[in-house]
Image (cartoon, rainbow, N blue to C red):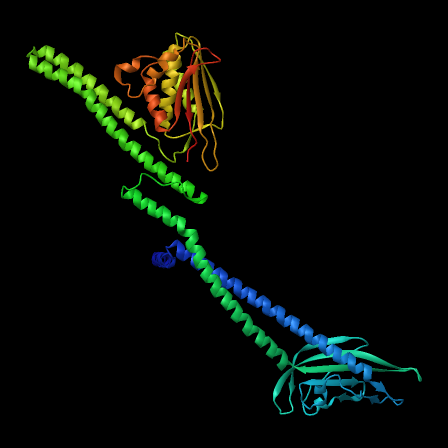
Length: 482
């Protein structure tokens, strides 16, 4: 148990140290990641170029040594007794210079190898006989120079058979060409120095360009921060629309949040103002009753009535304030279960009328908001429909307009086969600020609540005549959300 207990703080401390090491700045993260990627790319590119150059240089050396060997085979002859007759001219003057770094050697079976003048002094690696037209290339191989120093050399061998036409004999031999690795290593060294100088210079230029590109690409984020500071200081009402596509969801969400907070503040002020205005009349009645000097029983009855009225007003205003408000980033709510629950209750209330409610609900339709707001919409619209319908009510729900990277809107309509609403009364029914007894007109007091909820979700409520049932048709349109 003790070891387990001791190990936990150690792991936690390691996590803290690692978390503190990571840069908090986006600019630093981008620079670190891009720099590591650039260094890795330049290192891999340099290694690949170096390997390609070495392979090409070695292949060029092989071809050059092969050319020397073929040149020697053209001048080599054999006497009647099988003695090698060396060529008169060497393909390169260095073959005639002792220990020049370029050597030629002819190996024959059971005979001492012949060597060019340059082989006088150095000890070259022993070389085996090769078959006819067989080639070999290897290196670098160790050898001893004339000054007894150690060196490295590349070796190319070519197996040849010399035909003796007069006697019908064949003389096999192998030509070996040796070249010191010093020249090739010098070429490779010059190339590597130039390669890393150029790659280093290119890396510095790319780093500078990377800094400039990074500053240019992060400039929109800087503008977002500046605009947020202006909003915090009250110098701007919200974020502007001049932002890259990748930042639009962020700025739109910030604007939606700002608007939601302002609407909530305005709603709270309106609720308090409405509540204060609603309580004025009951308080005035009580004050009048007290000043009139009436009897105790009359005062008690009036006090009870006005207290009930004030309690109803307070309950209504608090319920309205709690049920309203567009909640950002709310989870999608399925509509059909809530609709069925409401309809079951209304069928009991209006059982004497025998109203039949039909559903046409798209399974993909969802309400993105608070379940209480959905219940307010469906409950008030369906209750009004049941109240005024003769025998049929139709609830239709389907997804609304869709936009890229946004959740779909919602279209919700409630129709009945009642008398409908006159076109002249529609504006009065949907009038803003209609409160109290004024809401009894039209299709009932719930329409004001529906209007408030729809307005909170930035939607529209329209009233017309049902094309299918002939009565009233209430249609709610909610726009696409964030």
